[in-house]
Structures are given as structure tokens and as C-alpha cells.
View 1 (cartoon, rainbow, N blue to C red):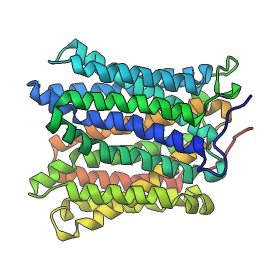
View 2: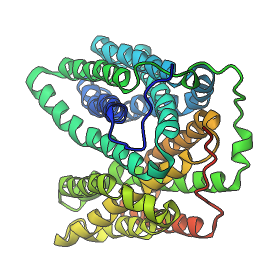
View 3: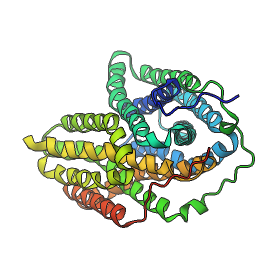
Length: 393
């Protein structure tokens, strides 16, 4: 007997609870964005803090191809719940860490693997379950759920730390995973055979990388993710250097992005993914390019609006285009490759951009990042990216 699938109506129970599970898992991750505060309280230097925080992303990226194969062989739900269980254990382990050491590094690696398992299964499930004619709208809602978690969890986490200390933060992170398990269970209570073990699946990555449309989409994804990561990683530094707060920019840009994600999906589905992959790139790039000159002025709203609009539209179109590649049996591999590249951009946006800023300056970093965004625009204009879907029933 097959489970309830996310239907073309979109806003049914499975769709709502799947998005809720994403929101709660990303809430768990966003709570731990405040872990540098705990590390600083333990006396860790900046280089140690960077190592500890970076290990999470490195573990998530390196484990993704293996976990993508497991999704293809074992099914989405087994890997999703495995990832949640691992993330829960890691979240509880933070309570036991009182100083920098092997245990702390191991906890971060385990947490990264758990998160990666959820992403591997969750995005594969979304690619299979979201109706092809409503993919942009569906991924828009999913993106809004992720950004809402990142926007809300740190604020709540800071309150918990002030009121009850870091242990309250870790327990809240653990609680969000437990709630995510219930939400995932409610999304589909009885997995169908197609979502369970598939021993006949041929799990190969290289053939998909030879697809020029998919390959150029990955190049665009890396550029977008790198730029998207550079801004939040270094905005506070450039704002502080100019004597202003970065808070208003963050609030405006992410509020606009969430609004775009929630409202533009239907229009993107109707007018075409390729159009909305190309149109927002200049806005996104210009928004980044204007930050050094306008972050201190009363016109800071302009780059914040441009960046937020571009971020919302580009997140939706990249995810929807990736989900359209391959047959249903190939979705685990396709989305594993796509999310690996996306997460890699977030690593380079922190590490490579930090290195570049050290060699030059923060002003030059943002100008260079804006130029890179325009290069992304040229790539999607001249490349063979298409939105042809190869889904099979």
C-alpha cells in the first residue's frame, strides 16, 4: 500500500509537515550558530573556533556522496530518521563538552554527518514528491522555512543563554530534533516501496556530471552559494568597520527573501524557471556590489532589497531546476550532487573569502563578490542549462 504523496494541491498534510521537519532541523543547526559564544567562554582562540565550526560543514560535504548512495539503496525515510537520530545524539553531547579537545571535534563531525543524512534524504524526497508543475512554488515554501529557522533560532538562543546558560541552548537544539522526528513521521506515515530499499538502483555519479545542462547548473549553484555565504559571513565586519550595525541589513534582506520565496513560486512555475534564473542574477550581484558604498548611508535599503530579492529567486530556481533532472530513481544521486555543491559554496564563502579579504580588504572582497555574481549571470545566459524534466511515474 502506497503512502500519501505530496499532491498537486501542494498544501496538504504531507507537504506542511515535511516543511515543518525542515524548519525544525534547520532550527537545530541555527541554535548552534551561537556555539562560538560557548567556545569563547571556554577560552578558545579564534583559530580554534574556526576549526570547530568549520568541521561541521566539512563533514557534511564529504559524507554527502556516500549518504546519497545510501538513500538510493535504503530509501529516503530510513536515512532521514538516521540523520535525525545522529543529530540528536550530537546535540546532547554538547552538554558534556567543557574544553577544546578530540571529543569536541568528534561531536562536530558527528553532527555534520547527521545533518548531511537529513539533507540527502530530505531533498531527494522533495525532488520526488513535489509536483513538477509546482516545483518552484514548493521549493519557495521550503526555502522560506529554512530562512525562517535561521532568522528566529539565534534570537531565541540568545535569550536562552542569557536566562539559563548554554545548557538550555543545547537542550533546545535537541528538542527541535525530537519535534522534527514527529513532523517527518506525520509527513508520510507509511513509506511506499519506491521510497524504501531499492536494491536494483544503479548509483553512479559520473554520468550525471557529463550532462552539460546539469554541469553548468552546478557551476551556477557554486557561484550563487559562494556569494550568498560571503555576505552574512563578512557583513558584520564591514558594517562595524564603518561604524554602523549590520542588523537592519540582515532584517530587511532576509524578510524580503522570505516574502519572495512565499509569493513568487506560482509566477515562476507559470513563466518558466530559466527566465527567473536569469533575471535575478544582476539584482543579486548589484546588491552585493553596492554594500561597501551604501551600508553606512540611509540608502542601505537598496542593496538589502536587491540582495534579498535575488537570494529568494535564485534559491527557488536552482533547487527546482536540479530537482527536474533525472528519473525518480536518480533523484537521490542528483540531489546529493546538487546539495554537495551548494554546501561547498558555503564553505568557500567563508574560507576563501576570508583569505581574500585578508590579502586585500573587506571593500574589495564585496566588490569582487559582486563581479563574481555578474559572472554567474553570464554563465546562465550562455550555457545550455534547461528545465527539461525526466521524471517517470
